[in-house]
Image (cartoon, rainbow, N blue to C red; front, side):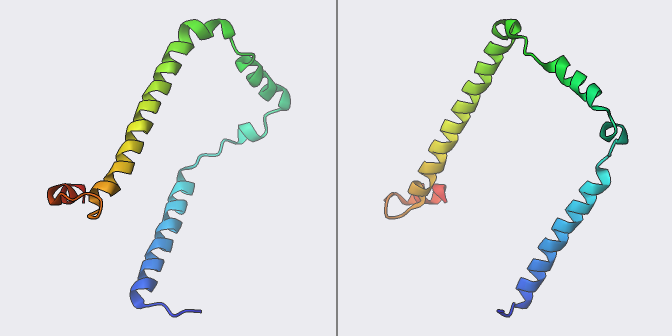
Length: 107
């Protein structure tokens, strides 16, 4: 086993301690409702029956336009983010971009 430097030990301890502290904090805020675990199957089936079948007649009037709008916004965001993510490293590379001011701005 490799020996660790003191800074590595401290970093490892801090990161593990942070993860454990986050897990403990999240477990303290979780509220378990025992009624749901003891609910009879017939009642849970009734809950599912209330949601299904899907009301397909409502889809064209109330669902389709907002859904397409959300998909278009997501596509625009993903496309622009991908373009920015691909252009940045090329602008920062000195062997690709010969302009010093552009390299500095990209860095």
